[in-house]
Length: 610
Image 1: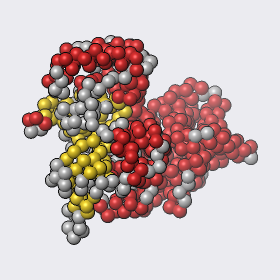
Image 2: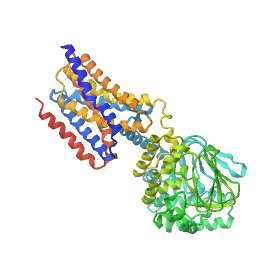
Image 3: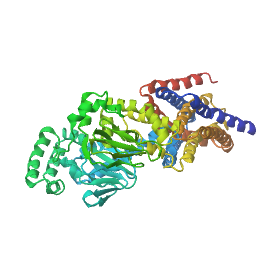
Image 4: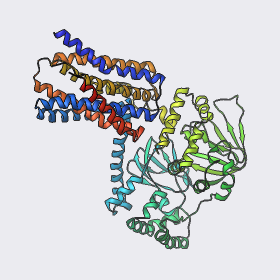
């Protein structure tokens, strides 16, 4: 009898989890669209939900063990949450899209709370009501800035207010050989005076460590001015302060009369037009750009944009004149600017391909475009062959335009799908075709979701940033399987296992493995390792089920009810935190019906059980 139950439990564990390696194998030959995958995940979630309610919760309730049900389910849920957090912090959140989504959502909640704290300690926002600080915190966007990134340079327009979320930034003085003026760390605010006067930056800001910034754009701030008298009053008071007057005279070179005239004009514009007028204007040559925008070579993104989008782009450009011999960028530098040549010639050298002849660019050419769009490091050197004039589009303006304009976003997406992107990654950065395809797919998916595309340099370091990620991912997958395995063993030690429970687990495990295997491949995991991981999880599930049948063979019904309740709590938490959110993120409205269908399938299966 003992051996029969032991092997029955082992077989039941294998049956419930054999859909995991099956799902991993399926991912090699079938890459379902997001809505199809969402349907499968939600269907599995509905099936698992029905199985848990009927076979675990229902069973415990029928025995009258209500206390065990309440206590056990809460313990199971809390246990899963705590262990899941530990595993995720070591890189285990990469194990499947659902845990990645949950992890990122949780991180965003933490960042929002941090931004609220930052605003509360910023003098300008201290006296604002809580409601308006929340609204400002909601429009702050997070900008990752790898070490070495130049956030802005002298003469750049001040379109953003920056708060250091984490990392370090140095403000450099161009008049003193770029020596540091200030060292900025977490919660420090910079660009305030330039931002509130609309004046060009007079310093250079450089990330001296991997840094994350909370950024308030001028457009978002001025939208809030439209509806907030508190912000209007606070802005007006700050503009009329001595600090602003001294800044305009000392750093922007305005005379006392010019400062007084602007301070008189600014409050009128703020009250009437809800915008901050520029104390010092920047040369842009918008009209000239609009004449040539649709003919820009090497970067055909502008070609088919509506006129209003081109005007918005033109309003963000800087027009710069550069002397012959100026080096625009060199290999391994961060690509934070796109250059559009208006006059003169620029020569492109290929240091890593010495036999390749240099290329001469003339008026109408874009350069630095591939590294700029993909977020990769430059691989070539660009030098002004003659005196040069042209426009510059900064990375932050580019990203804001992607957020604001659907037509611009679609045009960039088309550019990413051109063969030139694939050729660039494979020849200049030695990406293999799988990695290139994964980046393009991830970039397109991010933009479709209204998010910033991932930088290629960051994608390359995803796994490196979590040195324990492979083990953490494996532990995360195992953690998801432990409750179901022990429950199978415990049930079989006292009565036959329910077919509906096995079916619910089998159905739920298949799309989980299908989705996770796709995500793990995109993270760089080789196919054999993925298959081994899932197969080992299946075998361990069978072993744990068999062990559970032995360990709980002599346990009381009350203990079995407590264990089943703990498993129910953990599984319900998994469904609520990971499965259904992932399904909804991928498929939207398809989730409701597919969840219901999965639920009904288990109901039908129970009707055939004796």
